[in-house]
Length: 142
Image (tube, rainbow, N blue to C red; front, top):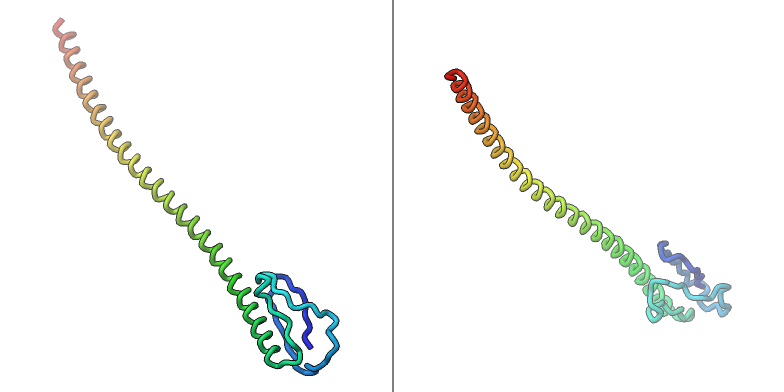
């Protein structure tokens, strides 16, 4: 006799089989087949013929395959989520790399501008000093 129950899709499914009293003609209280919600209707395990050992074995195999399918599907979902996370991290790293390159270019430009301004300042200071000297010479000669 096989007992069946409806279980949530995210819970692991454990199936117990007993071939004792296999010829019992009284249907179990809950005679609905074990449902695997993640499977399409045409892939759902069909209830076994209780009089046939081979039918029971096929049903057991089918249920195990359905359970494995559920586990693989969960693993695929987790891997897809991890893939999305890694793509987001990669995008962020590439953005930061572009930002760093832009900042490096700006730094180089500002460094060059700073050097040019310091050179211009020193030239202006020299020119001012020359003008002061000339002015003082004019003041002294007048």
